[in-house]
Image 1 (cartoon, rainbow over the protein chains, first blue to last red):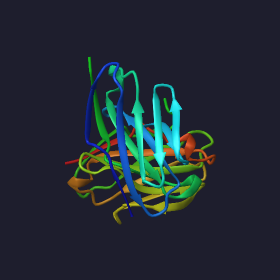
Image 2: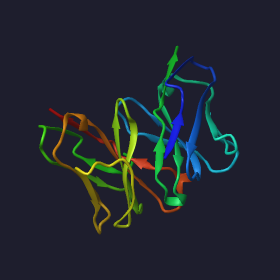
Image 3: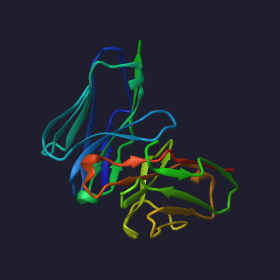
Length: 111
Length: 114
């Protein structure tokens, strides 16, 4: 089985930096992904980490420590449009593996 | 438009009924995944198909079944529906190149069982 833990809610103001943590326990691990979902919308892919370290994509960065079974998503220069749910997900089954998602973190960005 | 098409977008049906949800993956993607999203359970993996064959099963009830056809579209069949089956059902597809390119999700089917 697997379990993923992430905070249920995070709030921040425009222009700030926020970090969303994710700890996981799983049998079989190939990588950690992050997805964004706006209310009622489809989840959209943000990033994927298979190796330890930081991956940067524009304002968003994602970090993975395999030894600590821990990762985080870092969002910089927050904008109102970043208000959404953010999910971490573990890939358990190689390159075509299915993803198992956490319950998501609701990020609210205030003006 | 993500390239993954799900129909219908909304479905309202009564308990005990059977429904079929349809998904057309993004062009070139061989893998299709079905997920159920409800308020109290998050995104739950149901089942995965790759190039027409079942690859993995998750928390899929026996009342639910799925298949992937030769043209790679997939259908999820839900039968003997219960109130608790009300949820958003997402289909996602992925390239065989690996998860670093991510899943592409469809816009979902919102199922309401009354």
